[in-house]
Length: 86
Image 1: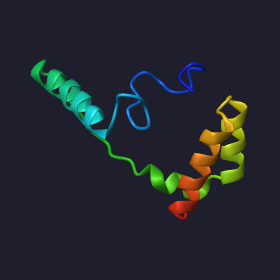
Image 2: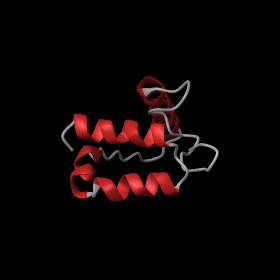
Image 3: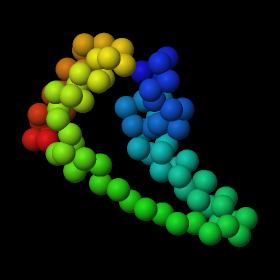
Image 4: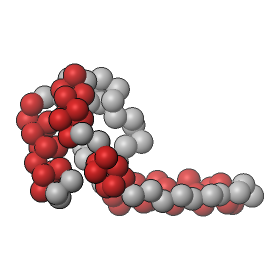
């Protein structure tokens, strides 16, 4: 996914050497820098889990395959969707 530029460099979840913690640190640093420079900072939290309830899983998995994601990764995503009852 990284080679095909589907995942951006600022993606943290499910990315090698990055995690929710590294995402939180990067977010905090960027927010603190902006505030220290006197910039206004607005933060919006989104619950993406609900988005999976409105998307056809078969279409989503098909698009991942078309992007070149290998079958093992697609099946992992499918298992995740099924595990959480999405």
